[in-house]
Image 1 (cartoon, helix red, strand yellow):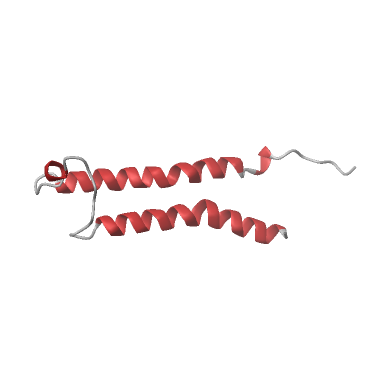
Image 2 (tube, helix red, strand yellow; image 1 turned 90 degrees about the horizontal axis):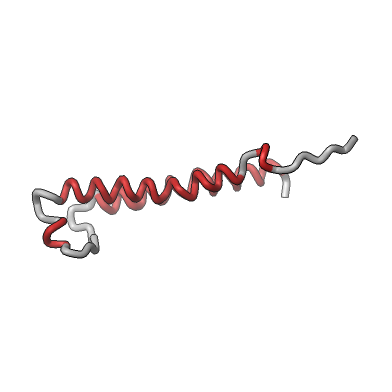
Length: 87
């Protein structure tokens, strides 16, 4: 695989996948009739608490999406690979 294709694929995996995941989760939480499954749903999605609950779910979904991105970006750093000298 050529280097440029490899770099583009790695960037799409490290950056693109979490972005798509966050956009999908946050857009689904913005719907007024979102199907959110929680224990004690009546309590947590009551009118007064719904905004705080949805905001907490949104923050946790962003954290969930960023954790694989951070680990993949750490694994993809160029100084991590051994340097081969051809001299």
